[in-house]
Image (cartoon, rainbow, N blue to C red; front, side, top):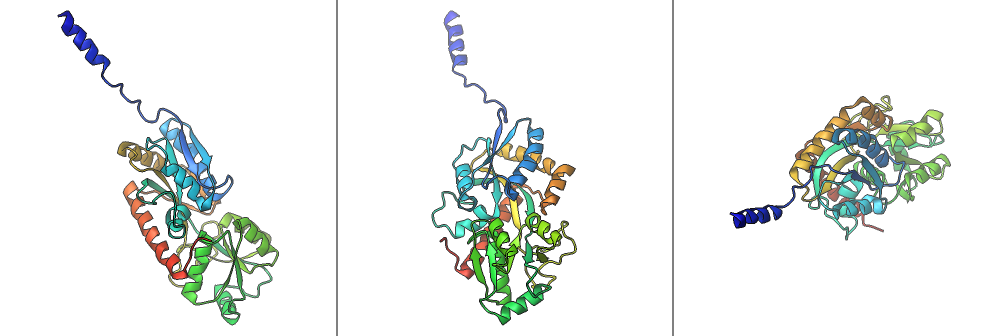
Length: 319
């Protein structure tokens, strides 16, 4: 009996300890852009409410570089234990895979989709000295001066660049691209008259439009923005089929446990329902959106295919 008891004791000593329930520590939320930009603000707006839902702090970790790809690669290589979350964005997960030949991640294979979080348009703005009053006149002016109209962006391959290239493809106009190291620099030169127009985020553009220093002509989305409901969409302004938005979502490293994915999805969807979250998004000119993990994965796949076609049409490669 003594030996049997000892055997039972030894057997119980070898029983693995049960893993602590998730989450047992803070969540790192990688925002692959610098502090203060739209992506950083989206992460912080939702992160506060997400922390309340899961009972652990959500710490935003800004990892900018290579158009959002550096932070995305860091997330992809992290342990799939539910403690590293990536703020997914259109550039690193839908555009960059087609222009950077050796990214350290695959946009679909290396991530578990959790939820779409937000979408938002850009605003077409021109300098006040430009002799046009609407999109149709801008297009006519560009046709009359092929290659002379200069547009600025935050760099080659950025959403603003591809948005303007879509305008060029749909209308057949010839434009001159002036890339900058950031959207702020392009807006500064627009104010100074060095370039003719930009597609800028509504918060950046709205302040200058309100002061009269810039003139807004339209928004890039298929529907109007609450931040400037008087502005037509590009389609309404005479460019049928025009629809370009930025988007943000949440993903985990591949092979993250399904129960964690589902719990995060539920927590994020709840966080998006709070009025203060929606108000903060509205101030950025973006709309709160949510989805199931499966819906977000399908959305990402569609966006990847869309930008594959667009980058191929314009012959875009990394510089």
